Image 1: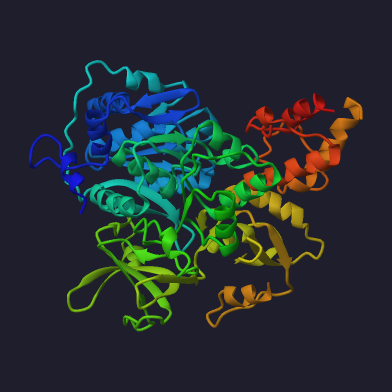
Image 2: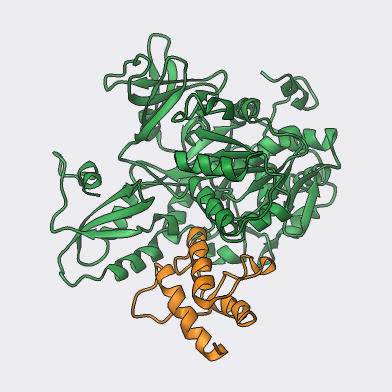
Length: 513
Length: 82
């Protein structure tokens, strides 16, 4: 383990470490370095910590404490980051949700989490009703508590963390296998362990500027805050909409040196650089997650940015990161997503729960200190994914993905299970899309699969009215589902293929593509 | 091309990129293009379409999230270029 880890220990020898300790320690070690920037605003480590302490004091005074939940629904912005760390510091549990969240989805999450406080902004004000009587803070004014009041809290004090580092720090909501969103419970220690292990591979530097274009509700966007703070780097807080024609210009203007992304973002960047190139001499680290980075993308990125190191990775929210491939390993292992993080293990398992020998394909299983506690208030789903195996009762995450591990420990990814789809950096449940489609009049059955070759989400439907309008279907779905979950293509069939137990046979549908 | 010709021409170029818009609805020029189904990847294709079909080049300083926010924002930028 990194020797720096001990310097993050706060005052007393028994005081617990929290994810906010990154900022607190940064404020002590490099107070004047820039930590956060967004729009025209820039905060040093010292100022960020001062504001976190103010907000923590405010929360503490309102009786919010250990184990309570605070739900945030905003675009990526500094206020959300400050609230996130303050909530964790007082021992409460932070929940950051996607700003394009639909009211129905939000309602289900609020029922599960029963928060003591919500954070909204004008762009998400339409979701206010769902919060009912729950007190709200507004990042940008609004009827009740404005954020400025929190930052201006008189006499901010250091609110001591009341818990232990095995306590939940935050929940990351993601699609469950049933279509109901599930909150993955991450502890302070999960973050501390995985951040050090990831840093050992990616080697962020103090002089780096890291860009977040992924939503903070998505763990890979969020974790950039930790990776940067661990080394004293600066974070540019951008938004997903910036990943279009303007992306190269923003990267140049902000002097971005580390660009974490998903294949869709890199596809756009490659397209724009070919169409109208912008010089990006600072860009030195490119990391991919969320979905498999095609070989052609890796080649293009290396051609366009010869000075940058490209890291293909594999992971899932339930343990954050599984493996990272180093650029120097790329030649020998072009199809691999790398070796497991140091101090962790990944292996393939057969249908009977036996560990498979090297090279054989099975369901990927992960072990290590990065495994989350499970799913919030979902013991059955937790037991399905987090199992105890063998005579030593090893705790194992059963990923639901398929692959093999070769004799040298390199992981080869072969595909997701039929219960989850990765699309445009989002993890979605086909069941959720199918359920919404079946609520539409005249839709008899629906099956959702991804066409990997074309990067399209496809919906197969059978309908009772021959004159059924595809455009209407897409439009209706766009009002019920987040944009990434709306199918790109609709294929009409007289009848959908079924499995033995009368469920839609997604495997058969994929074969029809 | 005159400014009055430009709006219908831009609407015609926009339509295939707005996947949540049904065929019988006119392109609402003040609506958020993201809500009409334009994601960041689609906006790159849109940029290329606009430049190829209108014979313009959107300058670097105009390449912002705001320019691609609504049809009218795009129109205002393009009007200055033709």
